[in-house]
Amino acid sequence: MLTTRQKTKIIKETAVHDKDTGSAEVQVALLSKRITELTDHLKKHKKDNHSRRGLLGMVADRQTHLVYLKKNHPRRYSTIIKKLDLKK
Image 1 (cartoon, rainbow, N blue to C red):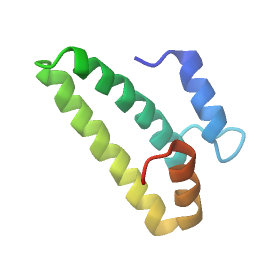
Image 2 (tube, rainbow, N blue to C red):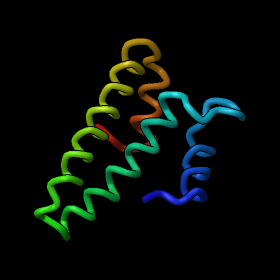
Image 3 (cartoon, helix red, strand yellow):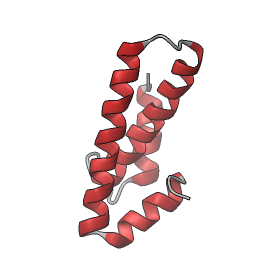
């Protein structure tokens, strides 16, 4: 679970402008952090299928945001991919 401080830190690092809280870059960064935390949780609790389902939904959401960025804003897409180290 992300704390408010963690969320604000992530938002400040990836925001497009000062009052940005909902751009695709911010959403991808927040989802990526939640995905890594949930992945660590699932390594300990292998039979937690409810959390696994939530993880799959978050991965699908992140992928949707990334497809949008790649299609409409290729430069912003490449910067967020490099910043979060998502692709090889």
